Picture 1: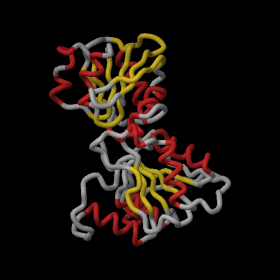
Picture 2: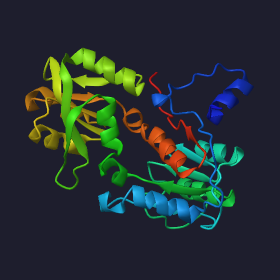
Picture 3: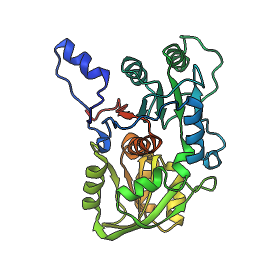
Length: 293
């Protein structure tokens, strides 16, 4: 049986009598996967399995990911909550619904913590996780860059063929490929919105059509030059910048900003498949807190 995992804000709004405005679900990955549970899978076993499948060698030097915190590396893993972001709502949901592991893309701890006190919002989340028996694992730029990872998933979702890596000089985490046929740029934008379930896009048009397309989930402004050098006529990313988009026509490349959340939340479906292969029940949590208003 498939059951929906709903964020706490909806229940709070319902209780208050206000009309709940639910964000769109990205790629419909807010359902639980049930199946055979592999008994005696410990946290350190899960960590080892993820480190093997998502190798640290692909991570950027400045990144901090992997095991973020655990109250007990020998604790048995019974249920895993997958999310793009480790928000306080996600952790409270995990604690209230029997999840002992939270598996995210964006690291819970990115910058060094000077102290573990409730005065800092990140440290407060770490303390809450540990106090509630929850381990947190995060896989960030290594998942972006690895073969079959974030940007291969994004390229596949947009139907790109003959894909190959491109980069910014530090990492070749971007992907570039060909659409099955040249397409009107507005039709391509409609396709992006439909596939990623994005509320809106920003378009800076340099060409009327799209064919050779570069993609990079999340914040991709540093890869624009790399996309141009790789021969892209169109570049799709989650977040670009005003200045670069304003100069898109002058640079000769169409830029499409599809939203950081929407271009990366595809990781949740990947995590569920990986967990199912390991025999671990999992579910996805919609961590998006940003609305178009």
